[in-house]
Amino acid sequence: MRIVLQRASRAAVRVEGRVRGEIGPGLLILVGVGAGDSSEDARALAEKTAHLRIFADSQGLMNLSLLDTKGKALVVSQFTLYGDCRRGRRPSWHLAAPPHQGEALYEEYCRFLTQLGIPVATGVFGAKMAVEIHNDGPVTLVLDSEELR
Image (cartoon, rainbow, N blue to C red; front, side, top):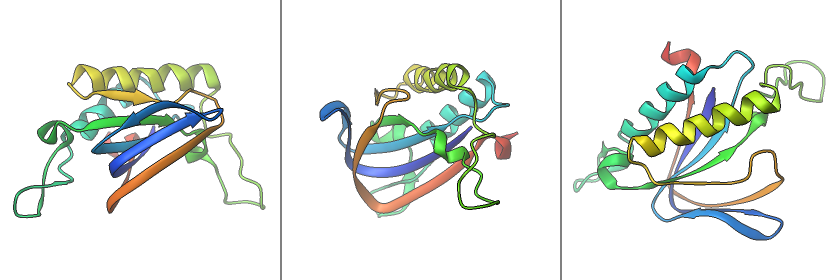
């Protein structure tokens, strides 16, 4: 699995013009699921997400986690994180999981975050979405479950 974490002062996702999920301070998280990913990948990335110290403490240092700040997560499915652009001019999606597997692991990732105590808002899996973010910092990080193994 690949995720992009963006620290946000607020973020929202709309489907067909209607807000489907929104948060105040926390993380906008784009989630891509690869063909070989498993429940363990979802769990490992949820643990890392919840405990990653990327929020400022009273001295302005990145010493606090999403759990420490009681921040929220807006989690948006993003299969294009597995776009392979090495050949030609059109991305290939052969590395992405098929939709049924992608949706199941996306939902597991959200469930694991919730179990860790993170309030989670979501978009709609597979829908065309408009994402709005007020990036805080900006702080943007990319995590790949293959690098956590």
